[in-house]
Length: 431
Image 1: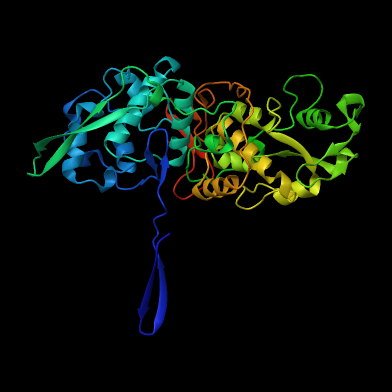
Image 2: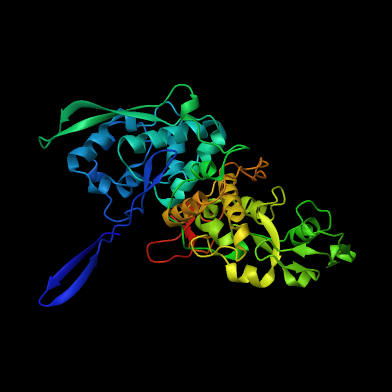
C-alpha cells in the first residue's frame, strides 16, 4: 500500500492509498477487482440496441467490471462491436434471457458449449481490459483447467478508429480466439517430479473471499465409501504406526500416532486431531466458496491423497486453527519444508488460489529449502456437476442459502442467485 507523509500546521498525517495492490488471474491475465454495483443504465451504452445478437459479456457486467470508468464514446464502441457479441457460441435469445446479467460464477451454458463460452468470455474481457471479481476469477481458472487443452484466448486491438456521435475517436478492438489448442496455451498443470516452487508457479494469485464461511458448508467426517468408518477413523487407522484396536462401529481405541507438526507420539486417540492441512476456512476463502456441496464434501473427507488430512497433536492443531503459512508453521522446524511443499501441492491439486501475502511468504520460505519434488497426485474426486453449483431448484426469494453462486427459480418462474449484497455479507436468494 502506498503511503505519503504530509505535514500541515505542525501536524503529521499519514495518508494511505485506498487502492489495494492489483492481483491478476494468471490463466487469463485479467485483473481481479471488486465490482462497482451502482450507476448502471443501458442508456449509458449508446447503440446497444442496434443488433439483436446478445453480448458475450452483458452490459451490466461490463459496467461493473470497468466500463463505469470509460468515456461515453468507448462505451458506445463496445455496444456496437461485433466482437463483443455472442454469435457463433450458441447463446440464443431464450438462453440469453435465462442468463440475464450473470457472470460464469453464477450461470453457465450446457457442458457441450461451456468451454467455448468461457474462451469467448475471457477474450472479450481481456480485449476491453475488463476485470473479474474473486468469485468469477476462481470459477474461470477452474473451468479452464477442466477444459484441459482449452486455448487461452489471444486478443488484438486494431488501430482503426471510428468517429462517435460526439466527435471523439476511439480504438475499435477485435477479438481472435485461437482456432486450435497449442502446447504454449495450455494451463500449467503440476506433474510428478515438479519441484514445489514449480508447482507454486501454477497457482493463481487472487484476493481472498472472506465472507460467508460456515464449517457446516463442508460436510466432514463422513463415511463416503460406506464401509462403516467415517473419515476421522479412517485417518487414525491409516496413520497409526502400529496395528490399531478397532471396536464396534469402527471405534478406534488405541494405536501409535506420530505427529509430524511437533514430533510427539501418542497412543490414546483422544490426544490426536485430524487436521485439514489447508483448513476448511482457508479452502473457502481461496476458491471453495464457489464449489458445490459435493465438491466441499469431497475435500473435507479426502482420503485419496495422504497430504490433505493428517493425524497430529490436538493442542498443536488448535493453535494452527485456520491460519495460512504467513501466520503459522509447524513448531518442529525440520518439518516446515515438507509442510510447505504439501500445502502447495494441495492448493494446486484442488485449483485453490493464494493471496499475494501467502504466495510471497511460501515462495520465500521454499527458497530456503532443499529442492523438493511433488509426488504424483491422484485425480480430485469428481463433483456432482461440472459447473460447480447444484442443480437449479425452486427457491424462496430472500431466504438464506448456500452455496454461494447456486441458482434457483421461484414458484413464479423468476431466476435467483445465492449471493451477498452490498449491505449484507450473508448469502440470500437475490435477483
